[in-house]
Image 1 (cartoon, rainbow, N blue to C red):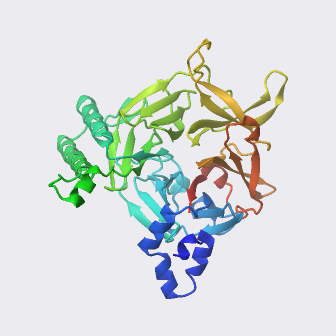
Image 2 (image 1 turned 180 degrees about the vertical axis):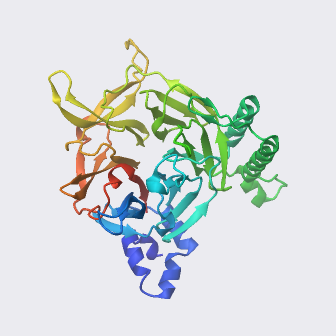
Image 3 (image 1 turned 90 degrees about the horizontal axis):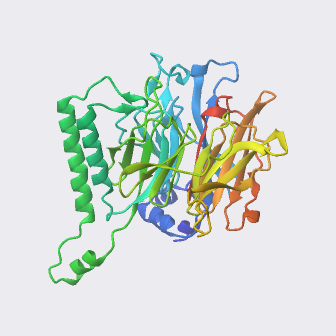
Length: 450
């Protein structure tokens, strides 16, 4: 169809022509053709905070705003986000062609431990192709700012089974949910534990039924179904974050969009600190913690391990680090001194890559962080947002100057040659002119190819 080849901005404009075209642009057949076709372009979705009544309004008058950047056209668009209400401190991830808003906090200026504050378990899903919001199954644990990752879950993996076994073992031996520093004082109700076991058994049976092919009886059609490999699907993993009383969490969960259910997994080690950032690279989910420790969750085995590196990348503690996976390579973006040997009066945002030296003459086989590139602009935003899509890393910085909030969107193309990994500006028009100053530290970003 011709409509499947249109850019998303043109498709949205064609939707306003008449009712018939509107029905055509949201038809499942057209959406499937767009997903499978090569005519997609990157879009950045920036979540921030705005105020309806200007700078003098109370903090409770803030609401969440979403801006979408068409990278090809270098144009920002406003996205309706009434479904989010006053929620903030959530995390965003792109699963397929949809955006998942996970957890968060609302009420009392999103302050932790307040009687008016609420930490959410709920998950909201936004489809840019249809422009509609919907609710997904809530998490088992209320979290604000969880660390998210997206990975491929195929039918051949015993992923859900491994997570279920570890969760039941942990519940039986400790009797409670984990947070940083030990177990909670609220012991598990045996009746609730038995119900949870039944729910986990239902997930396992549904996953087994969806991945097991029917037996062949000599008919050609059934034989083709047996030999056909199982199609992979994307799933979401969420770990860490903070609980209702601002306590650091180490537990984790996995969400399967096919079954619309969350399954609890084993928590990462409690002695590594709060989880700061994470990314899925290959068959491993890497999480960087505040103690400068890199931990890895093996998606095939369902176990955690500490990744021993030669030395952590030098960084300033005032700037939050970010892990991204781009072109099947793991990168960390952080702020450090320009040249520690010569001058220590200038800081710059650097990109480090986790590499393993496989040379026989190498004295150490431990992975090490090697500098890949540097951002040309001064790091004005201590909480810059980063996301990766295909072979590019995108960054959005926001800072307040002269009573206004300014934003800058840049991108870096990842290549084998380090000299070609340079940053460039992808948008000139400011999208945060009406944003509140809280957007500088409460923003989230995700990349979709639509």
